[in-house]
Image (cartoon, rainbow, N blue to C red; front, side, top):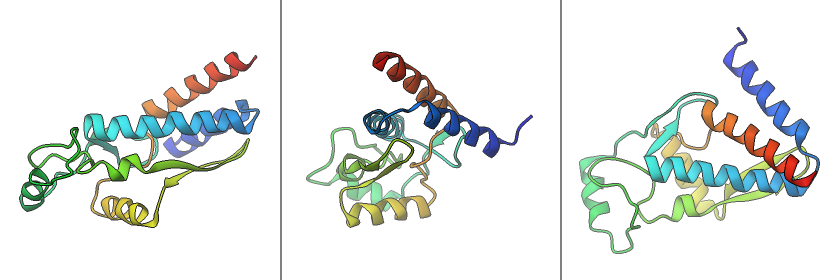
Length: 152
């Protein structure tokens, strides 16, 4: 059986090989942003390593949960208690955007440096959310197959 990282590389190589235009790569980028937002905000899950399984994000401290509960600009989908979904105000996940795309490359980032630093801080605290699970990678393969068929 292939090593997980080799298997993931093969899946990504397959995805990229099927993409024939920058517009297709942009569509894939939009799909991936929605996938990451839905998993993180909707399920409160992250992924510890590329191609791994999604799992609950590390809980927040009791002190932070109290502060979050009393926020004036609290997002309606914000987690409650000490659960985490990285959506206190919604700014972090809402600022994810497609920074660059070409036929063979895609870069997803954040609208501003403040949110980049916030994301890096969350990842450093054990709330890794910017990588894709094995199921999400397979979903991306299916999505690309669909957009290839749509453009044929």
